[in-house]
Image (cartoon, rainbow, N blue to C red; front, side, top):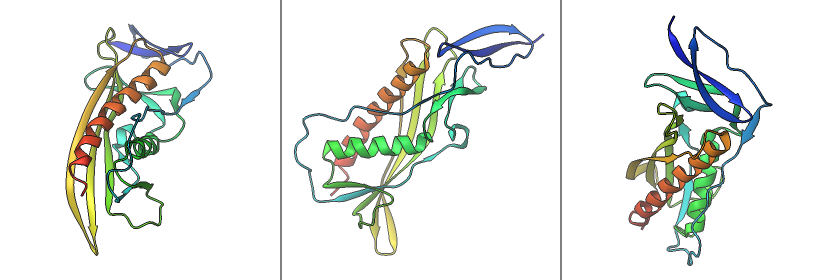
Length: 205
C-alpha cells in the first residue's frame, strides 16, 4: 500500500507519522485560534514627512485564503489543520500588523486603513503569495511567508505604480507546536517589514 504521512495534533503539537492507507486527522484537543502580534521598531523619532499613506486590504493566494493553518508536508501536498487556525483571515491580520509597524516606524505623518476617508498621498497594496508551515524536513520545520507589495501614487483619475517588490522570508521553528508556528510567522513578517520600511523610505517623497 502507498505510504503516506499523516498529520496528528496532540496537546497542540504538530506531529507526523507514517502509516499504510488513508487515515483521518485525529482531534486530541478543542479547536484553538491565534492572532498575530509583531514587535514594531522602538525608539522612533518624529514622522519623517507630512505624507499620508493608505494601506489597502491585503489579498492572499487562494490556497492560503483560510483561517486554518496550512502545512506543507511534501513538494506537492499541502494540508489544512482543521483544529488550529487564525482568529481572522490572515490577510486581515497581516494588513493590521503592517499598519502598526509602519506607524511606529514614523515612515509617514499618518498611516491609515483602507476604510479611512482621508485623501492619501500614497497607497500601499499587498498580495500574500505564500503562508505555510514547511514540514518537508521534520528535523527543521519552518514558517514560510512571501508577500508582494505595491506602492501607488494617486494622481487625479490616474494611479501611478511607484514601486513593487516581493519579499520572501522564513523563520525556524524551535518545536512543532502551533504556538511556535505562529511565533515563527511573526518573526518572518518582522523581517519583511524591516526590508519594506527601508524600501518605502527611499520611495516616499
